[in-house]
Image 1 (cartoon, rainbow, N blue to C red):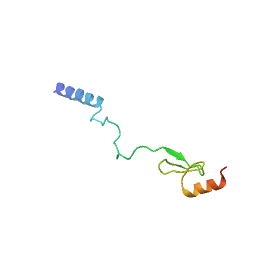
Image 2: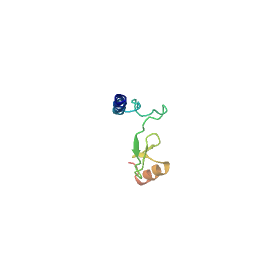
Image 3: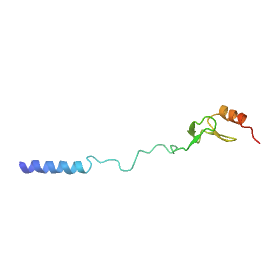
Image 4: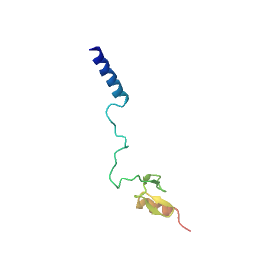
Length: 79
């Protein structure tokens, strides 16, 4: 009986040291194909950080919206 308890204790110790149940070693779960990380860009007018695919290009940088692009271009006339 002592031998059985000793074997169970050693087996439990080995199981705990190996990590218990198997963990997912392949990394974090994958999202949809279009979930690639986006670069964050700073609005030249207000400084808000927005995803690169949502930024509006303009004279002087990128902008978070049409109103900020127009305001920036009004305040900073070109050559």
